[in-house]
Amino acid sequence: MDNYPIPDLNFRQEGKIYKDSVSKILNLAAAFSAQTDDFTRNSQTHSLLQQFRIPEHARAVHKPGFSLLTIFSRLLIMFSMFDSLKGYVQPGSEEEALVEQIDFSRLPGHVAVIMDGNGRWAKKRCLPRTEGHKAGSESVKEVVEACARLGIKCLTLYAFSRENWKRPEEEVKTLWNLLRDYLARESKILVENNLRLRVIGEKKGIPYFVRRELARVEKVTRNNQRMTVVLALNYGGRQEIMEAIRKLLRRKNQAEALNEEVFSRYLDTSGLPDPDLLIRTSGEMRLSNFLIWQCAYTELWITPVLWPDFRKKHLFEAIIDYQKRERRFGGLNHISGENNNQDEHASKD
Image (cartoon, rainbow, N blue to C red; front, top):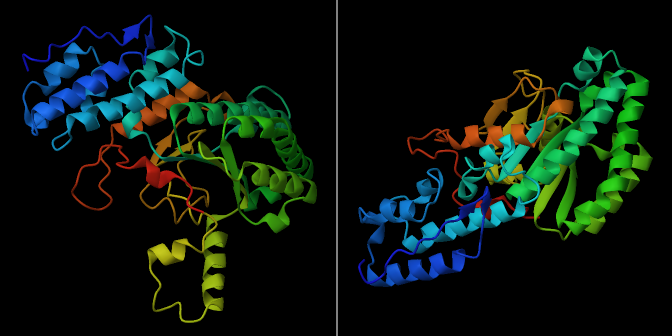
């Protein structure tokens, strides 16, 4: 240790994190790793991280069995994410205080959202329900941007359920018009930011003018890899499962090979990971027929905030709470809100 003095590396200055020190840290980490094969069990590891002035939550990346290079590689991911948030999160703001609590090496790979409360938001303001949906479209834009900047790999939005057809005709018409306008307006932004659009649900029931726009945007974004934005449209979880069963019945000799992995290939979400975190706004405590197969082990986060009022700070709060949880998947191993390999959460199709 004496041969490698600890430099005074201060990552934080006026609420910002600088990446210009990262290369120095990685070089130092390589030097330490060359010096000892068992540095992770050295009692001075946490002292080292502390002297680097790394925030307390960031030091949690040190775990038994991790090499020092692994530790600092994870920190490099975190600094890259902080860099993507510069100018988006204002110094000294509530959002910045929340971001500083997020461990960017343990983000949920797939976040799903039930966007509920547009009608109640409008009613509280003595406005037509359609105004609530218009206000909700701004929340969609903010959440998509926030997830992309954070480094989330997949975001699924429950935009229109099978049951939504029961609503007044004018409201349904407004919903589809809003979606068409959103796609026309935001498709360029999706392309420029390397975001991919994917649609799940029964497309045949969607109005043609919307289907045409969806097909266009899916095509121009199909090779984008930063994040997949999944829109659940004319979607129902039970109907999805029934359709998967019909597909299986049409295939011969499938019964013997049938297991959960095979069955999942017949779902609309084939090639996508199951959600790690499901957010529902407006305080309702139910899944509402949304991804009921895929959410078997998903962490749920319910907020009383109505969807048009949902902002990035609420997303940050959900992720912080998620990272505090222990995910056992029915076993005894503790996985505290962590995806050990976020690459698994990239779209596979």
